[in-house]
Image (cartoon, rainbow over all chains, first blue to last red):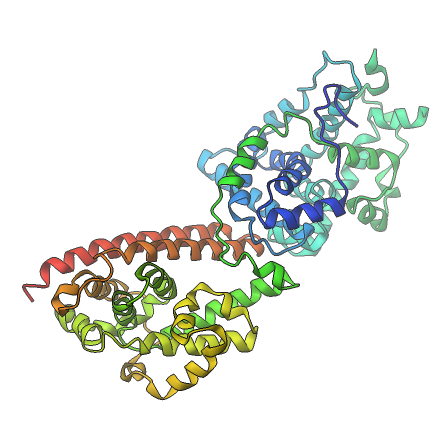
Length: 200
Length: 322
């Protein structure tokens, strides 16, 4: 689960992260770093569905606001993720408005998907490729479904929190997520993973 | 080639082994919650949520630097330690702020003027007094509308509550007492930690003495109290601020030595407004989607402060003529 150069941050347990959140809300830098490393990759993937190639800028802005307002944060870990996701979504909407660019431009999705480090034959490349492969499928979904799937299954929000972030009723988000997963299931039934699974 | 295990580009419809029909709603919910389901979907979601790479974490240094540099907007560093529930802390903070705002709103005509005068008359530690009092009035100032019913009465507005009853801090103390009582009922100990009450606590001598001090103050409600019209807001903000500025800016006209430099009270007030707004943004962020609005609100507040400052200067110029 880590890159050859040790670049991939080992995942932390939820308990460690909850402790990190408490520490960070008291101003502890290490706590903040732990939260960032845990959430940022998945937040970036979510932002990619919203704004495409500018996701990195959007998440950078998001974390600046989080850094500014985190002290005294009073929620739990789920609340924190929902809060950060909501900021991220607002920032992405701002970007979309100011750039008059359609969020999740298909060309940008394919850029992301076609960018695997094919010169690297190590396990890390496989790892990265699998993430890109999965994201390519998710980003090919209609926007509302992609958002619902990403917030629920990738960012890790529960249904009500995801609905809050999206500003929709929980039922609507549930429907979107279910549709998205069904489409994903159909899509990957044509895909290599199914084949690998059969051979395994 | 490593690609053998993932010929992802090869579409093979004949190899379909899982169909959407096999996905029950329960299975989907399980998958969405991070559980397992059909192998393909489970793998896909796990891969999508996979660990971050260095490139995904490229912004870490900037984010951490921002966190380290972030102002400590929470003036109650000990509150989370003393209080078991941080949620209730946040709620009580909001409630206390609302109670305080409501009370100062009722605190009578010329509330802002009287408080500004209070600040400049404070005999001890002018800096602390000024910032504490300004913090108290930063938000509710729009309510002090009746202080200045007509532009021509700038002088009387500033001279009335400001200089004649200048040395008396009753309006603010009475308001603070009510707010203190509200806060104390709500959450004992909460009010004590609020810097807005610092002047009250100092006036009473100690936290424990506040209740007694306040009960002693109850009979001395300021006459202006009943003259307030709490419904009025907004339009008169600038007028009220004008009077405010004049009260603070022309202490010489009252023959009292300036304990705070003219204009100085503005700056702590501005800071208080800003940090208050940041806190508001904090809370509405908790409610997810509102952070944009709050940010705009804080910017608007600062703009108002700027305008008010300019307005104060302008009215100061025309006051000798009127």
